[in-house]
Image (cartoon, rainbow, N blue to C red; front, side, top):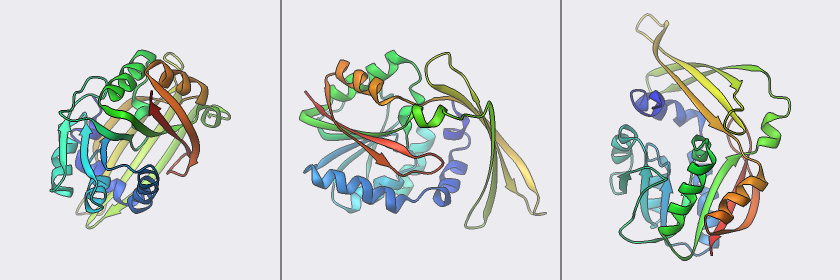
Length: 246
């Protein structure tokens, strides 16, 4: 279980306020939702509710889903008028089907085995209206792994209100389950003496994808891939996929 989304959930929420442009992200999804006439939307990997409050304010019939209750506890404060449910994307059931499911924040990266991806896509398919859409972003393996340093180190400084954080992270290849890598990170917060003090660690395996393999996974789960578009994001640029339920 990722500590970043459990015991460090509030740290995640505050760091990503400065790391991520949620207004830009909302405008991107809002454009594609409106272009396709979407009224009801399920956000998978909704996290702490930053997109939820914007989608609710734009009058979408919204439901947010996340694996971690700690994230949803913050989301209910961020977007008090939104509806949320705690569930695994590979096995959930909605009372009413939705027009569109969006997997945000590159959350698909956490589905590192093939069966888990197929199960997730198939479960989403069952909870969509006829001709419903699935939209998601994913890190492109072709771009990510070409020139991948054996051990990549990164340092991030972020501030939110009175809190100041530092994240030191390392990425290393792990090709056992696909185009995957191990990401370990250490989090620090400035104390009253203005020194960075250790507050937690996190370690997880993540996956990037080739366009061809995602097209195959979608097909096996009952989707037709309609479009693949470039998408700007933090750290690495993504591909954005739009698929329709067959």
